[in-house]
Image 1 (cartoon, one colour):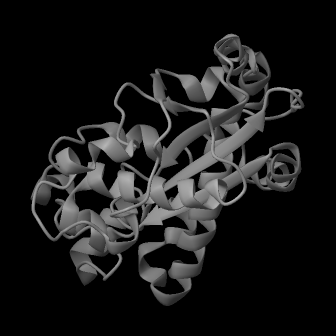
Image 2 (cartoon, rainbow, N blue to C red):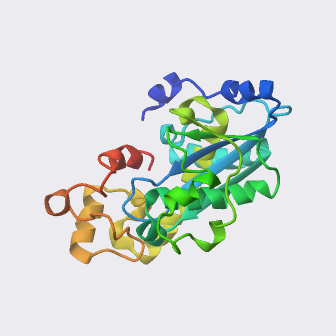
Length: 256
C-alpha cells in the first residue's frame, strides 16, 4: 500500500457511531478481529469504546491493513488516550483446533469485552463484517459440543446489542481504532514467538500463509502454535488453507 494510495483513502469518521445517540445511547464500542486467516498464532479481537458526549475525531487512524507497522505502533498510545476504554482478547491456535474458528473468535471477543466492561459497559457494539460472532447469546450455537466452551467465557461476553456493518473498519473510527490495537498486539506476540521458532519467520509473515512459511512447515512440520486442524503445507501437497477460509488468508496477510 503506497503512501499516495493511503492518502486517497477516505478517513473513517464517527458519523455512524453518532447515529445511535438518537436512541439514547452514549457509549459505543467498535470491534474488529485480526488473524482469522493465519496458519499460526491466535485470532485477536480489539474493542474500542467512545463516549459520544465527549469524543472527537482522531487524525491518522485507518483500518490497520492500510497503515504501515510504524504508523500503527505510533497510533496505539494516541488511541488509548483518546478512547474511554479499550481491550484486546486472544484465542490460541489450540482453542481454534478445539472449538472451531467462530467459537474461538467469540472467546477472544469475550476476553476483550471483559477488559472494557471493567471501565464501562457499552450501550451498542459496531462489529465489522456481516456475521455476529461476538454476542453472548450466540454461544449455544457456536459451542455445539458440551464441555468445549473455554472456562473464562461461559458466563461472560458481550450482552449489548451488536450491529454488524460491512467495511466498518473503513468507515467507523471506533472500529478502525480497534483493528489497529488488535493488529499491533497480535503482531508483537508473533514476533516474540518467532524467537522460539525462527524457521517459520513469524517476525515477517505474522503467521500468515506465505510460500516460505508453508515451505518451513513442509520441512519441519507444524509447531505447537500452528492450527493443526487446518491444511498447512504447500498448495501442491495440502490445497489452500482451512476448509471454509478460501483465499481469505491472502487478504489478511496484507496486514503484516
